[in-house]
Length: 217
Image 1: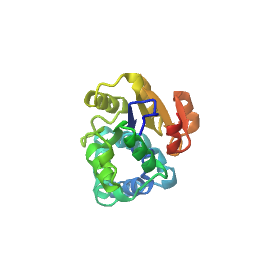
Image 2: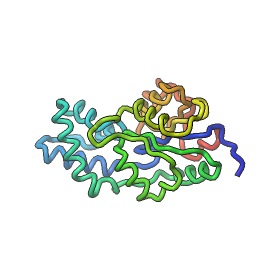
Image 3: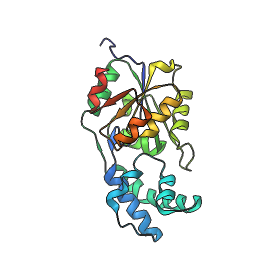
Image 4: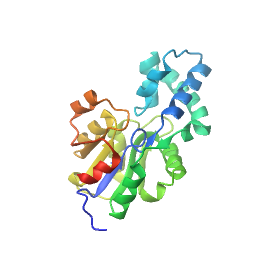
């Protein structure tokens, strides 16, 4: 297939971009706070946990310190590693997009704040791992969760493309801001969990309503 896509590489966010992880993440959060002894009266508002680093979200929502938040992360992973990770599904059209880019010889890497272990497990579960050359993600101890750091890690380990040849695709402002920080083009995956009024302020290069629209760039 002739390469008609204007970029040589795409960095994909995972949660909210490739997969919808909502059920598994919320179930894992509810398990953690129950085990810790907290109460959550508005579980329908826990969408804010999808995307950002978990420890930061726990700190912000429950007014916790670093150690307390990390204990909640540990409890979260008790449920997530066994059940929550697979309580997710692929967004419609995302598999077709990935396969199309692969046929065009576009280099693809994950750039996610999720720990690399879980990201790789999910990619194998959905049979997407053959299409991706690299996984840039967080460490299990909570390090390298900031998207700017994650993208830097990706850039340090993928082929040395020119910055203008790389596109960062994600659904949250962290993805757009992180990509722009490194001089990359950015695309807002509107089907995820970002808020238009927030993302627009980050000024993404492209706004996509569905995955296959990426091919129209």
